[in-house]
Image (cartoon, rainbow, N blue to C red; front, side):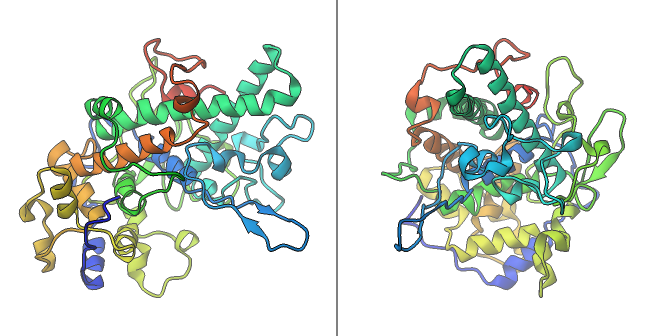
Length: 413
């Protein structure tokens, strides 16, 4: 995204020291004011979607196998996989236009409990698998509605798929993005267009987005969540770890995760402040696999190491290029680690949010990267609603007549 900028040269020992110090202490502010707890979960859903690599295989006589390249699109690829023909085990045998569900509002699973999904990451924890379940229900609801409207059976799946994709793209741009970067920044971006993310031809995801800016949500994750109105809190790990059936007692009430008219205010996320909950600093082996260095149990260490490995520029360099006020060394606070250089981009983005926006949303550098890339992905998709029908509006019911939200989408089924 910023090819003219040099990569930040920083020793791995400093990265590990910064990452180890990212665990949220007991005296740190644990909740944001205006950010519902479900937003980082939805952000993770988006991240899985745009990085899903289905790589379908095509056979042509004795020619080598041909694999399609990664599709950077907000098109629910992790939900649909290769469709009823390519992945029939994800669809109803008696009604192939509908996606399968498992028992107790769970994903469908094989005899060993492995989820039958288009992307195994959709089962990494119970909140993600439950969000996938709600998307399945929304798709099936659209199938039922289109069938009632008289849509020809051979077209049911494609029509429902397009409708759900467009509703999903709508909430990404007009509900999620304002919550993440601020409504005024979204309005300016829609009017002026992207300044730096202008891909030509095939849409690719910039490293600055994938390996730094869009990882801000790790700082928003809570240590524990209440899943039902009268139920107890559950820790993210190990209580809600995935890759296993979801018991009925842990089915998620999404009105506790997103603010929905008619319901009490939802739980809040953590602020974006450069700190991660203990659950993400001490990841279980089910998530990390066996690691030789205990530091790699920390998602913060992994984020920092990943950004360094892909040669990202510093946050200060990006700020100077885009014309944003750079954080001072005191505001970044890395001198405590003996580091006097510039700041790794991921750490800069989360600290910038804390300094400029009190942890409620991203600051100027993070907002520019995240906003331009998400809008660019939608606008670069020839099948998105903005490409096919820019005047389209959501048709599913909304609880607030003036807007359609992610809460409406998740409760549609």
